[in-house]
Length: 215
Image (tube, rainbow, N blue to C red):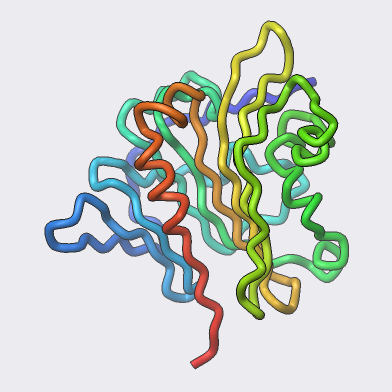
């Protein structure tokens, strides 16, 4: 059975551990967590929303140490998260148990979004098999730092003939001890993701930064 995620809109709240910093003269504002050493930027007119837990977090997923949801103006509370006509997303940091750390792999990270739709498939493998449900737009392995490794995958998905397309960019990174997962996603319908908001979405996703260096 497919899960439908219709989060209830709540009042904006101050998120514990998150601090938004505005640069003078910039159209963007930074969202950061100093303790976890992560940050990203969003346009000033976008909002951060206190809606724990993430509407795309499965029942068996470990709870995040920190997370923040964000959206452009126009988010509709009665529409499935993935099918919004404006960008929305989630950033989170998750401590993995020893068993979870042993089981995590690039394939498991890539599967995350589809498993929330009860589809236990790796989108990269589906694209390689030319599955008609997926259009792979970009895939990059993020292994340029010795203490972080991970991936960024962007694709458009339509589960069936009667379903609607959505486009998503999903970034997952692990620390060098394999016990902390840094996850970021941003999504909306294709005409939003690839059209009207394409520039902002790329800027927001590209700004996701994890600083785990010591000293």
